[in-house]
Structure formats: C-alpha cells, structure tokens
Image (cartoon, rainbow, N blue to C red; front, side):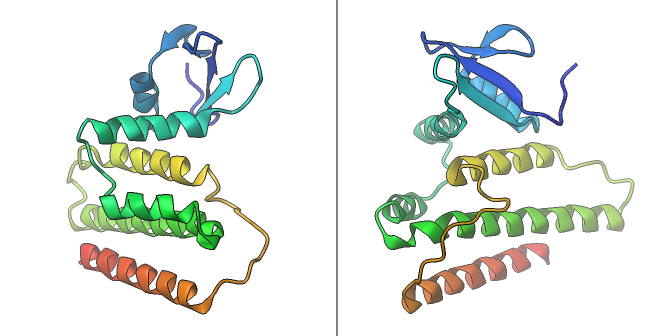
Length: 181
C-alpha cells in the first residue's frame, strides 16, 4: 500500500529508464504525471550519482504537455520566466510564483468550501483535486520546491522592480477576488 505521506521514489538508471521502487516496475513520464495528479509527491534520483533529478523531470513533463497543445502557460509568462533567469530579479521570481499559487489555491479552497456550505449535499466538483495536484506539481517545477521556507540573501532591488511586482500581485489578487464572487 502506498504511503501518501512520503515521496514516491523513482530511480533513474544509466539507460535513462525510470524505476518505481514502490511497485518494482518501470514507469514513463506520463505515469509520473499521473502519480502527481493523484496527489503523490515524487522524487526522482539518479541511481549512479545520487543526484535529485525531480525538477528536471517535472519541467520535462510541463514542456511535453505544452508541446502537445495543452497550453497552461501563456507566451508572455514563458517569456518572463526566461527573462528572469538573466536579470537581477531572479531571487524574487520563485517567491512571487509561490505566493501567487498559494493565493490561487487558497481562493479555490474558499470557493469549494463556500459551494459546500451553500449546498452540503452537492457532490465534489470533478477534477478539482486533480487540478490542485497539477498546480502543486507546476509550482514545484517552477520554483524547485522552494515555496516553503524559501530564503535567499537579501539583495537590494531597484524600486521600479518592486513596484512592478507589487502591481502584478495586486492585479492577480483582484482577479482572484472576482473569481470568488
């Protein structure tokens, strides 16, 4: 029986095959995406070096879904992500993404809770839990699982970058509050 509290360990062999240590069989990227959608934490380790490859594989899953036309990320977001790797604002991007997704998840939870309060007999909305699991996976892929307790050396940021981030955050909060109504 799977222990939902600890990450599912996937080992990558030198042949690049991925091995599920829980079920003792080989898995594909799509299998791993399925585990994540089901709410499982996944950790992918290189068998030979012991390196954690989870981030790389999560990004690969996102890239494959995007390339099949299952677009979640608008071009301007992808462009900003690429740009953030080459600017001094890199240190604030993971925190901003984590905060944005935290607010989005909280908004979803409040909405689902309010719907249940309106009609307690209403069945769960199909796919809501899967969507939340997908958001978690995306967040981990984008921030390298730095959303909880992330810290970095304090670096002074130009005032305009901070103002731009505050403006974007305020716009996101306004959109989320509209969704709650």
